[in-house]
Length: 376
Ligand code: V47
Image (cartoon, rainbow, N blue to C red):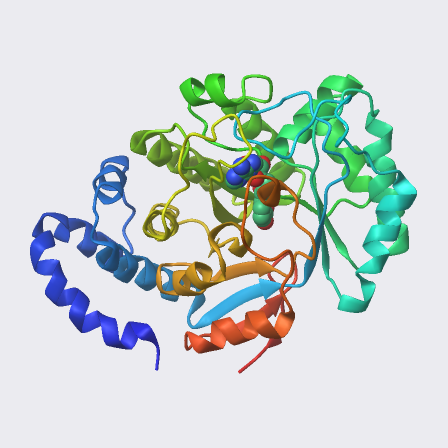
């Protein structure tokens, strides 16, 4: 029996205090689109069980009782970055003693280390290095594809793609075509942060803007490259700016249908220039996941990145609209530099166990959400 089977009755009782939101409840149950104003009302709603109830309903309509995960490995080519965003503890200046840049041989060796784990995906994102030429990244993709031809390469955030265009003098479209030809399979969703120009000016003024991030994604989707999308919440953004971010992503998805999953990323302040802030609570994490599920009616999947919110909250999020727990990861540097307390890696059977405990059916997927193994 799932938690949901217990909590529907309780939730209906708790709804008495939420008659003001009954129009939103009706819309969700009818499958109607929520407006920006609905989003603003929901983000201010502290009845987390109500949000969970609605989000779970929206998710089950799309994914039934399935909950996805994949077997992947993260690789970060370099932590040297010219952008130095205030929320980031991973990036370093070139001269910093902790700065590193992998040679292509090291990248391939690192990827090959994960072959015994039967990985189906390599997730490759990095800093914006001041000296590496675009050819380095093309060669990384080619060499990885040669070494692991059956493994999907999901690499380079839209911010990195935009930077490659700047350093190479090629258009975004040419950069993407070149990488696709080299073996790139899809783009991860990072670098989106919060699209609001007010926030970007303060936390990441030196990298691609919101419209530039969206432009890269639109171009990628038009070339047949699918991608994910993210939102970094819990720093200096307002509730309105979070809702606006979701609406922007939804608009582009209406246009291209190229996004696969949306991943709200929970800010970790430790070691960053924003270390005076506290990290979002579990309550806030679940709320953002549920809200994302409710607003992004044109996304098939909402992913909880367990590295950032912890295994238990990720597990519980399956009752709050989430249908994907991401992957085995193997090694994670970005959030761990900023104080993540989670492990670096998780075994496949731990992921299936967490999902089964919630009464869901675990499904190992590949990057493009083909079902590789259903554990029913
Ligand atoms: O772009 C940086 C964020 C992103 C911090 O596409 C931080 O499937 C929290 O995008 N606290 C990288 N977040 C990770 C990412 C991602 C992760 C998992 C899956 C996918 C996917 C994408 O992490 C960055 C930035 O937005 N970030 N610093 C921090 N201190």
